[in-house]
Length: 178
Image (cartoon, rainbow, N blue to C red; front, side):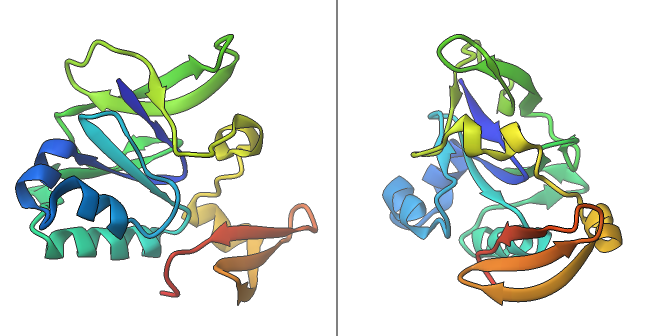
């Protein structure tokens, strides 16, 4: 199977969670700071719109014994960018784009465990293509944010920016205030 990749996705091997997380899968699931979790039995994905939030989350995973990198290669978890794929070397996932939906009409980024033969993409509860980052291409890489977005305020778990290119406000969901 495979898991959805949108914005900045932290992808963790289920076997590593079962090995390291106190309280196992249920405790891990309860610790997820937002509603982006999806899992296929081999991989778990949690998504973020901010590099700071993903970094904070990875630090929390490390505090529970999960290892991000060893000599530049992903060990138990990997960060996967919606536009560019894995951000570091990773020998245990395959990243690509697949068509999904009842008529295979929606194209999304996804990753799966190497060797997995099933292509179904598992999605977060309540996820809808029409309002997703996969549909709107609303993901803004950090380097572009610094050039075109002006920070206005933080409100209700969102950072609000003014987009100088479109003249509109844009919103970035946050799980922390880093």
